[in-house]
Image 1 (cartoon, one colour):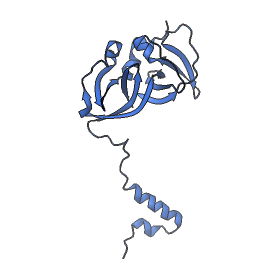
Image 2: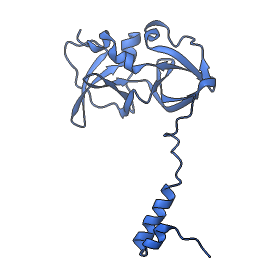
Image 3: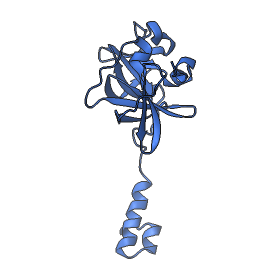
Image 4: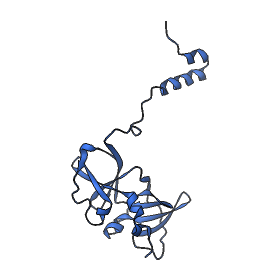
Length: 186
């Protein structure tokens, strides 16, 4: 004799049967991998600036966009490329490599920018290359070896090593709170 669930006794039509299937399947759903936070695991968005491989927390990066058309802002620093209209909102666009190294990013087709939270709204920062999601655990922690040289030292405080690559953890929140970054006028 087959067991019937209490919900099966109440439902008899095809729609009700489908609702019952959904109810029972959702009762046994494990969390999606991106929702499960395992102790010692850290995930972020991997990218390249110059020769440095960096990663920033998902909490700091709101979205990733293709580089939108930019309107220059007169009287701003050279690293402040201008503003872009993204879905009806003005978004400041910054050349992150020029801000940190003084060297302009070579813009190419397919260029990406990371949209980062800051007080008063978001800001887009241009990167050289996007690597996508990177996941690390405590065993991947590494000593900093050049990832925090120069101006990067203020924003890169730790590193991970994975597949023969060292990834500096770049603190976007700290970047957006830096007075020089917030004052884009020349």
